[in-house]
Image 1 (tube, rainbow, N blue to C red):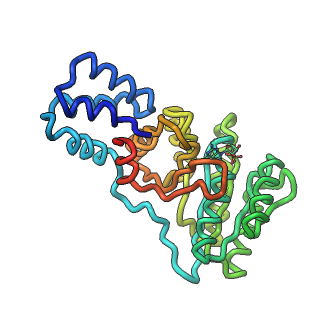
Image 2: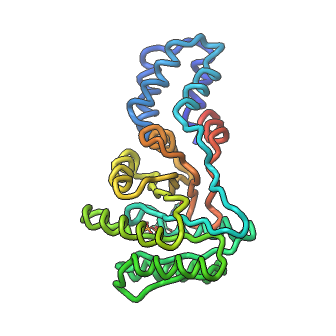
Image 3: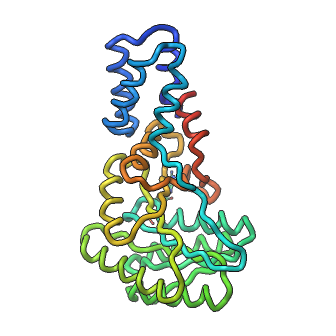
Length: 278
Ligand code: GDP
């Protein structure tokens, strides 16, 4: 990323001019930090003495990020259930598979549910991932009721002693009320079988501020407990992580940095800030 690096090293040598600050603000906004966050960073740069600049900017960035836990707490031998929600195309199915692999690598017994029954391609994609990473996938008949598939998946997870259940839901945003009804129903049905521990919202890092309004729509039908920001590989627009976390007060838990199964990391605020500043 290195969004701030060249500016901060310049401003640390001599006080920034108005033109410098305008240019810096433009770069910050283009990186999807949002106007509000960008302006607060500019205020910090204006206010601080050059010798304190870097630490003051770090403190400002840190203040935007949540200090709630980013880990998904799991207990050996008991089931942790995770719903993956988000608009189509954001990387939901890929992230469900990456998350499954993340837990499998920890030696957990993982079950995936392909609940996007309206998109045969999404079901096929998850089945392919499941085969590749050696994780079972529960699927329903084409166009089956997603809630029924989730019920089957949850029952199987409980009965067969799985430790992690990851449900890939549908994300058709064009019919907002249907989506809400469907997600609400999925949630109620799963909760009849087992509590839902996490609802992770998948946000496409390249769509910037649009993702924030998508999250607001989804959070009306299920309370979000965390976010996965995808496609921030090699991007100079990584500011979206800060902007969304600040706007939604939902902790960013994982980041997707590529199409491969290994391109997935627990979000670490300290190294994220370090990357912005290099
Ligand atoms: P869904 O419709 O939300 O389930 O999205 P998919 O999981 O099918 O992903 C849509 C596209 O984005 C696919 O081509 C994925 O390979 C790609 N994708 C998903 N996550 C990432 C990521 O972190 N980085 C990149 N570069 N591509 C991703």
